[in-house]
Length: 112
Ligand code: 5GP
Ligand code: ZN
Image (tube, rainbow, N blue to C red):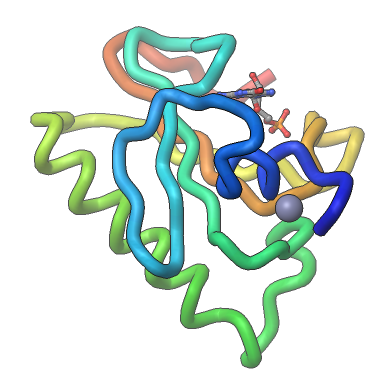
């Protein structure tokens, strides 16, 4: 998508601190980390949020979750939180599906 920040990051038009990449997804450190470890995992295809997931694109979403599990193991993360904000009121600021992966500090519940 032309005017999407994360599509530009995937294309290399905006620099990012890459952790992992394959043909379906891209993982990179969040620019404003909210925990000692805070990275984002995004599909390479433009999907606006979880609200756009259906049977035609759920395989890529499942792959993203599998990559999160593998990356967490590789990074030695035993406890972590995965968050995906959907819509403005929930705090979504970039309309390209992304999963936040946060670790390395105590977390509170419910989230704010
Ligand atoms: P949201 O607010 O949509 O749930 O999450 C968007 C996330 O993208 C935020 O945590 C924000 O810090 C991060 N972000 C925004 N712009 C950039 C950028 O240019 N580079 C990186 N690495 N992260 C960004
Ligand atoms: Zn996009």
